[in-house]
Image 1 (cartoon, rainbow, N blue to C red):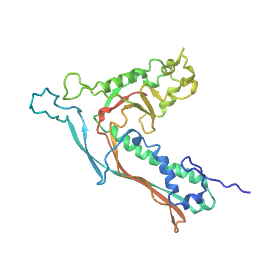
Image 2 (image 1 turned 135 degrees about the horizontal axis):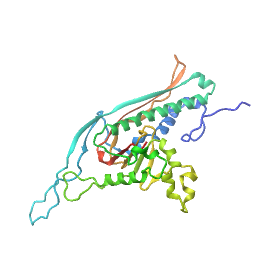
Image 3 (image 1 turned 60 degrees about the vertical axis):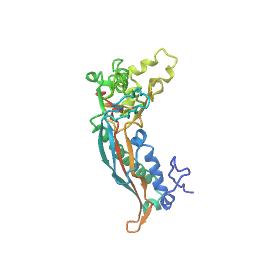
Image 4 (image 1 turned 90 degrees about the vertical axis):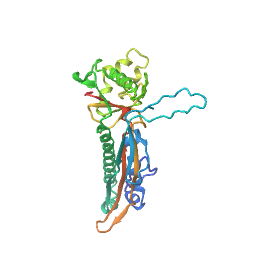
Length: 312
């Protein structure tokens, strides 16, 4: 008997034939949408902002985040002073609609060409992820108030210099201090922002560098923990101290971004990512579903992001 080839996916439970995929109106789109949502960097790092039913959101970018007045000693029947907001910059950002379609031909259905259908689903998923990730990275890179510092070993090759003097630990420690030690504009005495970053965003090319990097592996030398060293496990570290390491292909390969998740910006949907019901078009003898999302990304607290340049 001939073997029935099926499409399997971690989200769909059972395995589907092409006919089963296209006959259920939402099955094809739901599988792709679930896979896309797991890979959107903005949805991972940004907080959920206000809805944008009118196609835009007005917000204030925090340039200084402190009250211009201190609390005071109040006499009996004295008037209690009120706080005054620090320096802010009014901003507005509009939503943008991005979309892509997926087609399955009649031949794919009758031949049960699950391989081609799976490849097309993967291509659509990857492109939707890349498109929205680029929106996020553009919003951060074009914000002139984001903090920056140059890697200590930038002239010697940055972090890819495979030696104990690459400066990775030094740069991370310096960056964390720079973020937390920012003087609050308009504040008094030694008031600081005290921002404690919790995420390190890198290009995946750094993942391979870390596996055999002398500076990183030296930490495990003469230690009971040698069996979890990157050289032993062939896995890059997932944490540097308090920093969770996140990789994205859209991140500039020469930069490392240190940030505070759910703090430095927000994402707002006019309508969330959705897929249209699968429909059959007789004139083309094909099934199609279309994916769209109308959304925006805003960076309203840029001091919670630090870009370390010159790491490679």
